[in-house]
Image 1 (cartoon, each protein chain N blue to C red):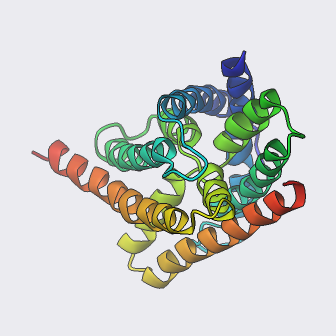
Image 2 (tube, chains in turn green, red):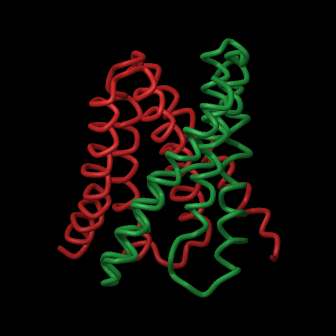
Length: 120
Length: 130
């Protein structure tokens, strides 16, 4: 049952990541990967809400499997974050590569902590 | 935005496969409330190594295959790796008082996963040019 819920959440989360990335990247000409940053921050906030809620006993395991492990897990990505950072390094844009890591981690953590604090 | 239903379908199918693989790894290596999250660490590091290898293969060996990168890269590896479990586990560890573990996990993943992307890319490029 858990496996089915994880699969269902991921079936929606992965294509939504692609659509958000396309929509965000179409809004500017810069090479900076704002699209991946957007999904990673949004997913961190939602998983923060769910995890805090689960620790408080308000979110059942089935919801965590569907929306946490499945949806948020597939909506967010470390591989694309890593690949886009390495591509910036290879292109000589070291400042942008460093900024991508620094902004992704600090804003992602802030979003996760905010969500977590709201429900824990 | 032009709707490309076949691209969305392969990303969704790949995302399911990747998420189930991640779920299996994190079930096999469950993290304690104050322990280092080895399961997701392993998932993100191996996923980064594989995206590096995949992008080298897509560029040098299999160019022009329209659905390959969406399925394997955006779908399988995107669904396999995760940023939200990374950030939330750091917050959860810090809140549980395991600040040193949280910092080690934060820095350790970056210091291993980002070079893994580059390593996967460089080694695969070298292998296909031999």
